[in-house]
Image 1 (cartoon, rainbow, N blue to C red):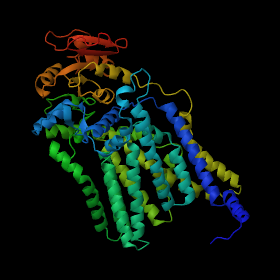
Image 2 (tube, rainbow, N blue to C red; image 1 turned 60 degrees about the horizontal axis):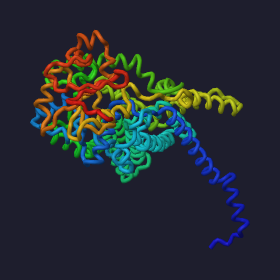
Image 3 (tube, rainbow, N blue to C red; image 1 turned 135 degrees about the vertical axis):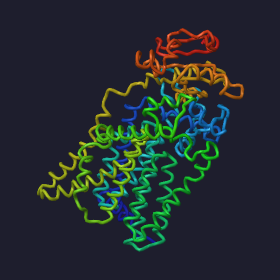
Image 4 (cartoon, helix red, strand yellow; image 1 turned 90 degrees about the vertical axis):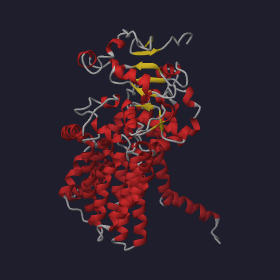
Length: 575
């Protein structure tokens, strides 16, 4: 029983607050509050709605997971319909299975959407009004996973280097504009960072436990967690599988049994994926659905995503191989010349590559650097074929920052500056240069609305003109599916395919009753694309000259002819 007088207890309490553990707690709380305020400020200045088509498509998947408890999509592509029919799987557009995305991020979105179910129908109806599920669900979820990722950033840097390096690395990570812009994009990238960095951390703990610590049981637990997190990363974005080669190499380089541990890791990670791969095979006849077909985007066979808009593509293996090879060569040059330099910030990014000329004392630190480099190279090679894979490269930014900061301290120590304030000033200068883009993002002018082409008020109005079981055809089906809660088919590349789609492909009595063109089409190059290019069949319709047999004869121009909505009859009287 504690018999200390009350005065002594008070003195102990004051001492802890002044110089003991209490001081650290107070400092940590104040730092968290300050960081939270700055992030809220950055969000208020830089977020006015989703801008990325993929983010909207993932969001509508999350909404449908909430309602149907299944990966049902309202964003349907003609090429996907052809892909399914060739495998004997013709399904209704009302409950069309998603064939392109993994399920984990939409499932997390569904959990966050549950408290705001009623807001989907009411919010965003006024021009300039933020869509509530984006503002209060998507953005906070991504910000949460940035914070959770920061925990693994700190633990990895501390495990590889020191507490000082870990603290500065975490600060640089949390003050990186590219990190928070990725979070505001709504693409779920912070979820991949969390699972990817978690897998790396548990791999480091695994190799330490099986090596220096000689604790096989703990090593097995960490190996299981690493493989589980690696599988979860792929269930968030398929491109995260490009991280696996470096992880397997780390196990092979670090352990005496160079085959057993990597084989166990691979088996557990694949077992984590297997239920979803089985679902894809059952639904589409392919392990990854039609996601591999996105390799043809921006290739010789498809200008942009044009291949998604046709039902009659006749592709041979030889043509696909030549197109993908040519694209890979071209994209590698583009990434190396223009995009690779934008994957980090400040002096730390180039300083990381200089660390390969320096030999760190700890063997684990040296090995992990090369393992991370293998994953970087693997992801870059995948990005030459799949354009969106490069978005994952920011997962390496905190790892690069940790090595760069550690190397910076080595260089700083060799200068042998006597004044401590000079060392502090140099360190603060390096951190400030990395944080400069983030600081600039806090300043005006604020981000504008994502129009053109995205404005929830317009999309909701147009989608509301149709009856519940009627289908829309549009050049931005991801937006009408997300904001308008409307089954939407990507407008075909040719008018003939539109007739085929309307007359024969849309089953169960559902017919296309709305055709919605936005600035995505109307702003295309006039002579090269609209007049003589792939959209030449649609050009007369965009000008208001409808064919005699065209089923949608009532037209409604929107926002000073920026957009055009066509339907079978006048539906907007009194609205």
